[in-house]
Length: 489
Image (cartoon, rainbow, N blue to C red; front, side, top):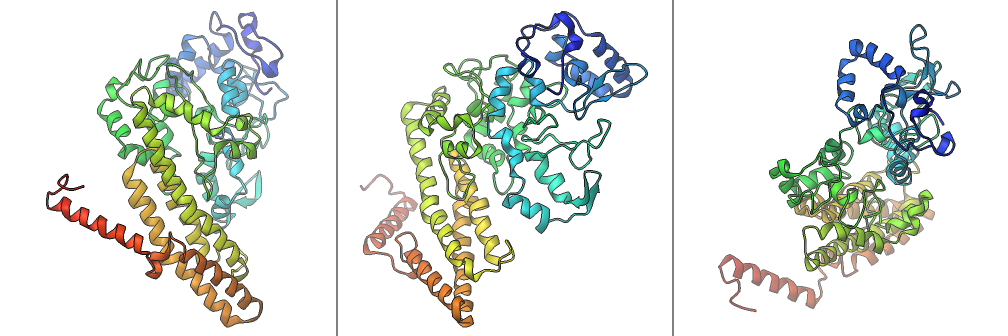
């Protein structure tokens, strides 16, 4: 393993080999190596020392050397101070290092989707950042041919990237600093504990606050922090923040606090029945990241995660257990009925037909991704509007579900996506030959979609039953406006 704890001596009781070591008890006193580190860093980096001095690590006699010590054979090892300290250290503290003391937490984390965030490299998102948005203008020792600044300062800072060593423990400036949640470390491990537990205080209260997650979970494609802020949960949190008991060691919802939940409450923290978990997928019953929402065990299988054996029903029960701290059974069941209905609406009305239409349209498109107007339209339909609607429904954010979600989704479906398909058909027919045949196939697929019950309104083909429902809805609206609500059935 990259780091080693030999400097602690007999004070640390290690079980097993170094690669799977765990610490049974904290050192009786601060190591001499750490004392030497602190003596120097007090002068040069007083902020770091003060943060560490306020941490639980300090109280447990765990310091600089215990976390940063390295084996001379490690890729990123170097002698920090050849005159005084003369010890090998490395800058990166990886999950494998944290696992020396926090073995259970680390095991859960490295088996989660969070730790796999760095695997986005090579995806459609990275095509955008590396080629379409950016260029190879950032040249470093590890990237002599250049790399895109848009990817380095954008994608990699949330998702993580492979950290490159360029000699004598020095890390390539394109890959470090980086606290991306799925950072690929020099010891081969995936993940970054400091993505959530900021150095060097590692405040548990900070990790439990929604803003901690908002560094990455925000923006047009997954605005969880914005959704939370508009939800009743977020409103209750900010109104009652001083009642949240955020520093509590156990922090059990319904026991140590009742004022509001945070992201950590629902996805990670302890309940009366469940312990803390660092696998953030074990309470999620839909994966809303892909174009069509899927069950989490399906995506877990793609990543080769052990949690692929945990069915979505069990995960939903785990989340319901969290909800039960504040809500009744009927409330919870009805919420999930609403949530599932929105996901199914998106899947059936937009996602599945959209994927089919894009597949049929492919012979009529220029081969390079995003070189066609419709590529951008379709990408934003599922990656932006569709995700916003689904994520907002899961977190009870009505404005993001509707105006930022299904409204934008429908607006761009009918005002951009359908007209752009019609343009492709017209151009294909005009071109003749194989293009004309492809255009005919696309026309058939488009006609089938538009004549389906979900879309036939666009052709002014509402059925009599649909017209009757709309007439009844208008009548109810007028009654409400005139104060007649409750006077008729």
